[in-house]
Amino acid sequence: MNMAVMNKTAQSPLDLRPGDGSTAKPMVEFQQVSKRFGAGSSGAEVVALDDVDLIVPRGSVTGIIGRSGAGKSTLIRLVNGLEKPTSGHVLVDGTDVAGLDEKNLRSVRRSIGMIFQHFNLLSSRTAFDNIALPLEIAGIDKQTIEKRVTPLLDLVGLSDKRNRYPSELSGGQKQRIGIARALATEPKLLLSDEATSALDPETTRSILALLTKINRDLGLTVLLITHEMEVIKTIAAHVAVIDGGRIVEQGATFDVFTGHKHETTRALLGGLAGMHLPEFLTSRMTNVATPGSHTILRVIFKGENATEPMLARLGSDLGIEVNIMAGAVDEIAGRPFGMLVVSLLADLEKIDLARNFLADHGLSSEVLGYVR
Amino acid sequence: MSADILALLFKATGQTLYMVAVAGLIGSLFGIPLGVFLATSGRGELFPAPSINKALGLVVNATRSTPFIILVVAIIPFTRAIAGTSIGTTAAIVPLTIATIPFIARLVETAIREVDPGLTEAARAMGASPMQIVFKVLLAEARPGIASALTLTIVSLIGYAAMVGAIGGGGLGDLGIRYGYQRFMPDVMAIVVVVLIVLVQLVQSAGDRLARQFDKRNRPK
Ligand SMILES: Nc1ncnc2c1ncn2[C@@H]1O[C@H](COP(=O)(O)OP(=O)(O)OP(=O)(O)O)[C@@H](O)[C@H]1O
Ligand SMILES: [Mg+2]
Image 1 (cartoon, chains in turn brown, cyan):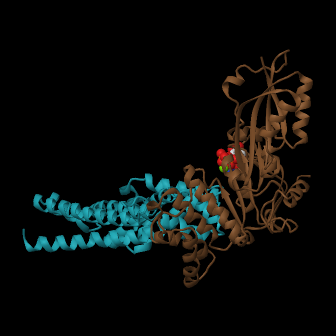
Image 2 (cartoon, helix red, strand yellow):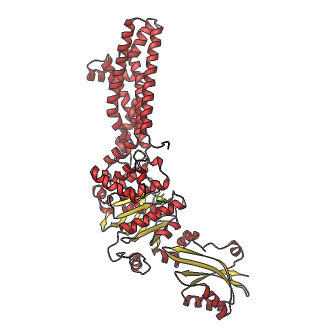
Image 3 (cartoon, each protein chain N blue to C red):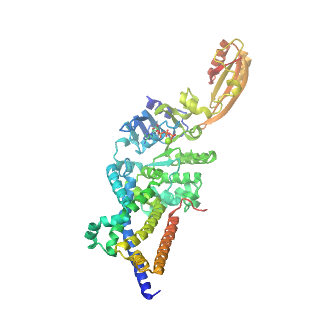
């Protein structure tokens, strides 16, 4: 079922990237994947992943977001076989990695790059030699290594740090070296496990910009996991929300974040503009309407819909008094998205009329409560 | 001090160095791989063999907790089988080596366990084989720790090598006891002690320098 949903969204006009190749087979596909830990002697077993179906479209930047312990790392580690599923299939470019032995797995891993929260650079190697490591492991000769590593240092903007040790680099620079290292074997897929979680917001933005560039210029599929909404909003065109080992929602990021949301998605979206109601409202709001109370409405506008004129017409056409209480505009996957919290003074029938009017003009709304 | 004594001192120092060098070399040859194995053969590790790991761990502990002088006596038949005799400098190398192997192994194991598991993970993700991980990641990253381990081993060996002097192994310990103590020549005793101190000091500072050179974790800018 999820697969069908994802395929549809991949083809939808919401997908901004040209030549997505959504008709091609996905880069990664999880089929009914479950993973349990400690099923052996050690007693209590942990269900890290529970019947996960997931698609990572070829050429996309796909994000997985979830709370700590939701199973994100477990999920991403299944992709390059660092972990084996208890049941189900994990297809990478059509190959079921769950069924591979260590030897075959090693060659698959060479076509998958991975970056980490704590960079995991070898302290005993210079920037150059760190980037060279996967090539050495693949048994590539020195001259070829030289030819591959130099442009990679260039790509990540650290040619001048070529002979520096990790201890001489900043966090952002270390992650750039990590990215260059992950690209050394010219992989088709890049996995990122919380790659920006140890970085400050500005460095995070620059790393995300680099990942976007890599995705666009090299056509590399990027699968990233994070607990930060900001990261998904900035670079992921597709998103899956994971909670307690289950994928609770997935699809085009804009749709998932602006649509009818699962409770977990809502909680994760807490930081999104306009999601937090001002205290003076929440303290006075009740769930039941009383005669003469104001109705508090959240009006959501997506993309290019103009909101202000519509609200003005609520007053002029329907004779409803409208007050704007809070509001903000944000950007998700490159598209504007905003919400306004308004208070309307009208009886409930009029409120229904108002909501229908807004819906007719492409603005969804939600009654939050009532204030006397 | 007479020229005779000086000649004896040179000879004894040579013997001590010989014992330390050979025992250190053979000890490392066995001890380092054993240490690597101990650090990588636990459950779920690179070369999972938990029962062998446990058995070897027991042997290592047993050897390490046996007082050296008792070890020397206890393995006399083995020493005789290997060296053809149980007395003399060459024979002394046998118990010295036997004591050195588990000593190095534990220190190397510790050094390797201190390598960030994230690095092993990263190497696995690159498609590295377990052997490549050992050589390109674990041993490379543990180099400062291993250098310190070998330094400590050699320093301890200098002390042990002096001890075997008491049971006919020759070397500085032997000189100190026979001349300094038994013949009441306190100046010889003093010189022996000074030479030992100088040796230890030299080894320690050379080892420290090597470890510092290997250690790129905290470089001054
Ligand atoms: N090797 C393991 N053995 C036993 N339990 C494990 C193992 N690895 C993960 N788990 C459990 O599986 C669940 C999911 O863990 P996972 O590391 O995938 O979470 P996560 O979403 O990455 O969390 P975080 O954001 O904190 O990194 C947790 O309950 C964790 O305790
Ligand atoms: Mg994690």
